[in-house]
Amino acid sequence: MTWTDRVDRWTRTHPTVLDALFAVAIAALLGPPSLDILLVADSPAWTLWVAGLCGFTVLATVALRRIATQAAFISAGLGMAVTVALPNTTVRPAPLGLASASDSMEIPLFFLPTSAAYLVLLYAVAARRPLRESLLALGISVLGALLCTARTATAYGALPTGWLTLLLAVLALVAAVAGTWVVGRFRFDRRRRLADEAAETAERAAAGERQRIARDMHDIVAHSLAVIVRQAEGGSAIASKSPDRAAQALSVIAGTAREALADMRNTLRVLRETESRPSLAGIPALVERVRATGVDVRLTEQGRPGVLTASAAMAAFRLVQEGLTNSVKHAGQCTVVAVTITHTPNASVFVVEDDGAGAGERPSLPGTGAGLNGVRERVRAAGGTFDAGPVDGGFRVRAEFRVGEQGASG
Image 1 (cartoon, rainbow, N blue to C red):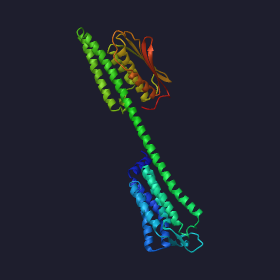
Image 2: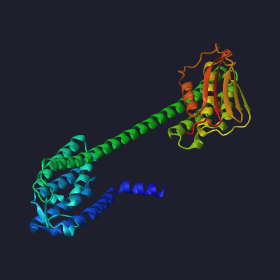
Image 3: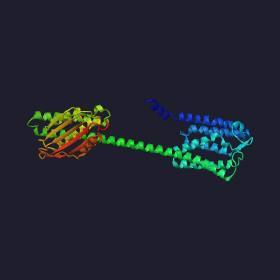
Image 4: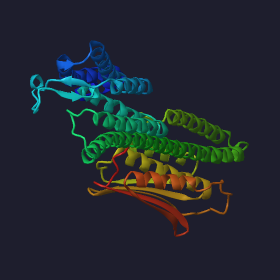
């Protein structure tokens, strides 16, 4: 974890600290000029004290804008309403560094720079509250802008009267309010869109994980049960004639069941560790287990495997497993199954093909084709190509993984 990740995590777990620091920064920016105006204002002391307290209230609510958005906005709104209701004050422009033709000028007390912090609260409501509440806040703010314009019209020293000047003042205040609200709603919609996208991504990941587990469960159960059924059939047929071979069949059944149980336990752990996943090294043992059922399985491997990703190796193992399972389920006792693995510098090819001999001698075990569909999905997800179908009276499944075209997942 980098230091930026640590900072991001800390800020997410301590939002009030950042809000307080932001409020302090706003106060440091707007507080001193507001205090300067109050110090040179010519008004009753109570008026200046009330204006100062209202300005402090508006600044303080900035720190509460996220943890108590409604209460902060209401407090700031009341503070601004009181400030607008206060009588105008007279200030001397020279100490403030302002140019004026007269020695004094009349201004409304909501001209204090602290009033600008109200827009921060409006933004917070627009960005964090539902549309109805944010529209109500917008309406209150627009009404406040109109009242401010009306009060400004009475301050002859601050703004010359005249319909054009008042119209521009109204437009400026309403534009500031509406612009702040629009930016806040944009932020609200963006946060909601990101949350929806995150939820959709998580749902897709969960669905993909469920499909993956379902494929693994099918591969394990279908293969193991096919081997167990064939061994049980063969063992029951020869039990009276050859007890030794029947005992061997029972031993294979027990071993297959134990392996299937272990594989199912690994699958139910969602296969988080890569070392628990099947790989190319497990193919010979897989072939031997099927060969022990009496099926003539011939494994041929040429070349050395190149760089296969973990997902490609697992897909190859499942392809061989499914191909052998289909041969055991649907072909006869005299079937010859050839497992051919060919590695070249550019690709690795895996083929499982049976000749279909004796397919009519014994009823095939039921199957829905879900196994081949699952293998097809695995192979394609790993960046390989897959095909399966009848060939010369038998059946063949084939997958090819080319170097540089394999998926990175795994």
